[in-house]
Length: 325
Image (tube, rainbow, N blue to C red; front, top):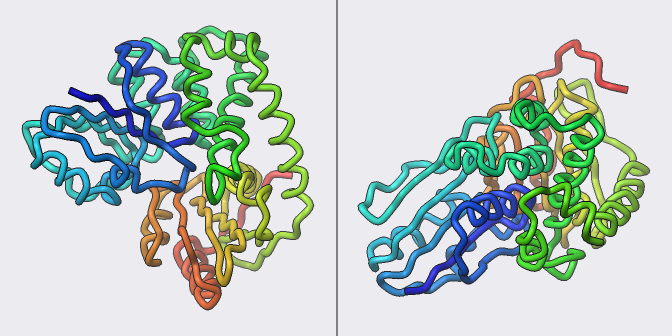
């Protein structure tokens, strides 16, 4: 029998797997990649009797691969918070799927483990742009305000490391980053005792400064957008910058478009005070997917940019709200 751990390479996927394996240690083949590499089940060819664990990967996107494995006699346990569509019912399938917009996959794993390694779920929630959920989860940890800020920074840095066109854009391969976390049950010990956090924090800040210098596109609508050049730092920082714009413009949807050949790779965020429906907007386009508050489009042709911005304007009409300074 062989085991496979299949997980999104962002903060949520890594921290979800880390919590689970702290509670249930097991060696497994690691299958992961950049955040947008979301058809990860296609990279696995398990045999009958093998077992896969999937974390923070869209079931809807991987449905055909999952059903193929189940029918071949592969056991699967699935943790996720993305839109799933119809969830298969099969004796070899165990689903822990909840697309509530206040949840990330790590919080679902935390619920499954009854809070056993909650500090890592807090890290993930901060990284997944769910600060209110992170603070709620942290309430029972009794950490200082200073340590809570460190957990926030760690989550943001882990998430930042997952963004890129390919793993060559990243500073650390997500599987390598997960392996470096494995010895640490306390994320604060990881911060104090390793060099990875300081390295990621430094390069994250450098990339964010470049992004903040870009002009923003704004109209009298419920949307704010930024267009970014086709360079590695843009791809690395796209998720973090989209999250920051969402926090600074809580009443508006956010569209962050990174040039990719004759089109764009797009990160989308719903308004924070109405964090719903952005996944439906993304799915209006061929390569769009995501969850209620945060979604993306793998490739948006140049001619579809205006249609996307118009759709965002209709879905989230302008309201009289002051953005944060």
